[in-house]
Amino acid sequence: MTRSRLIFATLLLIPLAVPASGAGPRYNIGAESIATAVSGMGLHVATDQVTLLADVVSTSHAPRLRVRSIERAADHGLLVRLDCESSEQCLPFYARIRGNDGSGVSLPLPLIPHMENGQSKIVSIKQGAPAILLLDGEHVHVTLSVICLESGTPGQKIRVTTGDRKQIYLAEVVDANRLKGTL
Image (cartoon, rainbow, N blue to C red; front, top):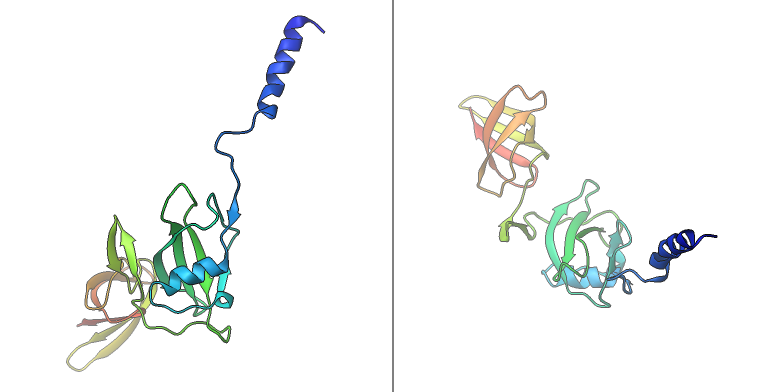
């Protein structure tokens, strides 16, 4: 083997022998840590109610978790968005919470503030969510299935559209899936 080939082969093998910088130990974030973080927000959750949607790891053995939002899931459970207080410790992640009987959690919304641009905002209904619009007139009561064009909280007026997206209404948020308007 020529000297230049030997040097080239050596240079190719050097990165394999040197550990990657920043590659340290990784620790799994478990259901107990998530239950503790959610319980700290006033929603008492047992460890067996928490399901991780994926394996979540941290660079710290016991990172401090922050609950960013809690939303109602399609299966009547709750979907919790969490992250570490230090963004270098873990990436944001989701966990699912179900009721003690496995059927889901029945809690009124709004639950916990949703963070937007560092500001806390209670979200009762989210943009893109399906909802029921109750339109009341003097002699007419109409119920429509709509899609929310904006997120909103109870008492706030948001724009919604029909399923075919042909009409847009301004409606007041009543709760997590109901809005009201007038004809």
